[in-house]
Length: 219
Image (cartoon, rainbow, N blue to C red; front, side):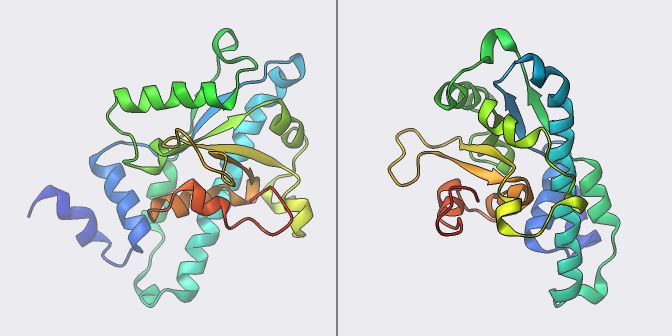
């Protein structure tokens, strides 16, 4: 039995996107998660930024386990499920945080895009996995929406409340984006994990951008 077949035989009932993620973690890289760039370095942000990183993690975890519960309810093989591989996957979530005031203070999204794409290209990972297809930017604008954001369990379920707190996603592949998609989008905290799932299933940020609710610029 080849080693590369082991995860599929251990958990053949895993939905495709989780099977691919589980396989990646076993045979390509030991962790998964977003790269998060910090581009605001005000005194106010120094204390709040670590909490904001933890907040994104809390919302991703919330979305991850909600999707697990949805699989239990709707997946045709749900009677075979157990929680073990999901807990194993979650234990390996680890965001890559990039913060350096001398290099990134106040820089544009285009400048961060160039830095990220150079890093991914050097690793020969461009477009090979969601971690290398897009990244998060916390700039001053998004920081102001996040510093007092509630935890997932305290977030009101009205759309306008969910969209009040957002990060910015940037697509790594976009060089000359065509309108209406500018190469990046605002994403609510509650939409961060959904966006990962979209990328895990082969979509690109442009497609997710087109799914934003009408009359709003936040996904």
